[in-house]
Image (cartoon, rainbow, N blue to C red; front, side):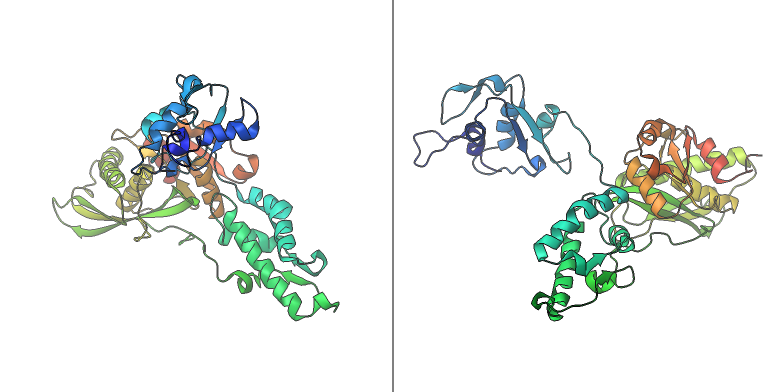
Length: 401
């Protein structure tokens, strides 16, 4: 959408003039209070024909839209009874004045069990109908479906899962045609299992994110939110140079400005924690430390790796690895307070997928955890922390004693 005339209509002096989309919508629905869905409002363009965001502002603002003026009709139109529902993938590209008129409802992505139910109830029957494959001759096992969801289709929705199922059933249809089933020939049932799934959809797009069964000294597992949902990431710390007065920190891993600042805050907090634990330890004053976050080619940013970085630095200073199967997320302040972060549902699902048993989450995110389904939290020991001292006691048992 890049033309204001699509919203406000053309003036009748132009050849081929038409009313705007809203007037056409009211005419098609035959009612004065329809629900109007505006899809992908974050993809607004701005061309030579004006700024459509300004026209939408007049359209969506409840203080103005009771007298909406369509250029073609040239009479005020009352749109105050119309319910507008807009969809968007990200809020960053929506103009701030327009966003201010909206009530934002965030909808998180599907979890694996929800995707499985959708695939079995809707996507698989639809793929069978589209390809004309008889149900009695083909079957995708539950194990293969779970593997398809976890290792091939981790996106928030189910569009990619639908594409993969259609690909599988197209190949099954070809096999049945080669066996002359359409001519009445009998054949054994074609079963797609975990073993032969790669023959239909290729090698897995996502393998396990877990690098170590037991993280070594200086390495801690963090949790991140991505466009594909949640993922686990490791923060690695290593000493590159020792010497009096050489205390410094270097960061790599395609980190953004916010994450680089988190590393500096983590370095200061770790020095303070070590000073309280062992005043004689001069590790940070005399060590140049390198902090790396794999994978190096993937850009990363955000404040939620703060407590993970402090823990990695303290693990290096104390010479101790953290509690096994531990992951954490949370922004940390210079004084050691743990601040809330977003994407808790996706992060908990990522931790569960990686075999994590204990998760450390900011105390103010307790409300987000309470909203999670029991099947998501099952088998996980979720701990909450207000200060870094609480994380220290869990990550390194018996340290403060």
